[in-house]
Image 1 (cartoon, rainbow, N blue to C red):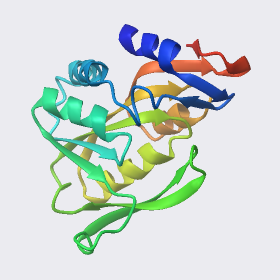
Image 2 (tube, rainbow, N blue to C red):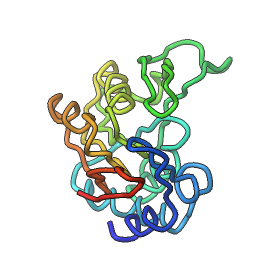
Image 3 (cartoon, one colour):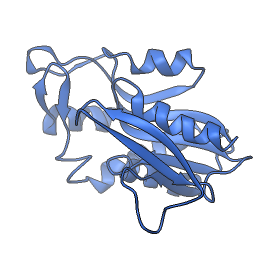
Length: 189
């Protein structure tokens, strides 16, 4: 996706060989026009899949997932990382380790919002090791729902996430695939 690549090159900051900072347009400050285009692109790629819900994880996945849900005219559900007083029973849960934050969280979604018969599109901002996407997929599988695919805004293709997801049988659609961040430079696949 041309507009996303341009934003990565002009506004992204490579912090190390494994970390790309995109908080200027995607996960702290959000460029609504770019995120709208991201939603349109995901909706186009999954338009024939009869998506009933879009699922993401808080908080960085919410903006692209919302834009996608709007384009698909369906509901958005996001997995919470922290327990809530109002979300305490009837839950689907999975453990997810964050590469960027180097911490594990138990993510939760109400069984009222992901149900058997749903056809879910998982959306996330980054794919590195695949842990967030696999955790979200676990929630969907616990509900006996189906997964149409996994949409990723930025994939670090030099890390094992895609291989893990594809080995598990999931369709992965990434809008920008990075082959390397070596020498503080973004290289696209």
